[in-house]
Length: 252
Image (cartoon, rainbow, N blue to C red; front, top):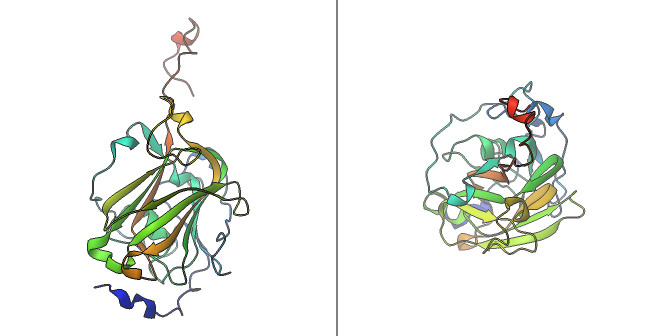
């Protein structure tokens, strides 16, 4: 059972897995291009980040993958009509304990978790190879199981590279259990949508960074069980109403 003594965890596993991890559980689209490398972001203590690439279909996995489990917790109605785009990104973290690395953030199971192994802040970097429109980020946290490892306050940043990241929104949670949804709005207003157009209620970025600055019970290292990134799904095709267009069943 985790407790406040997580400050005494050994740090000797910090640099054990310094190679890219190719995730084949959710293959990316064919036009994703190759895997890009992303740095650990500011504040990572200079360590080489653990990385997971989401390249197009031909990748391979290194190390064991946890079996997929049905995730618990309520899913916000705000993600209805959105598409999950995390599979199109390269993921990295500032530090990780051996066996609890970046791949556990994307293995589809809420029974596994990423565990940091170093000083705060703990960073999750999500690097896209092209500019992406992002509307929401969701983290699966479980205070019942993780106690002092559970994040209490975290900040979502966005930018083009780690050198021009800007704080977008800071969120505090109290003993969460399940999905924590964070809408992303230009200017940081997460309480209300400014337009019915989902593309107006989002941000554009090549890089998202989740920075965990405080845990419950003043814990040092952190557990995050899953992270998802949502983008708006285009639904309006009013411009395609010509007679010629109506002859075709699908658009490729």
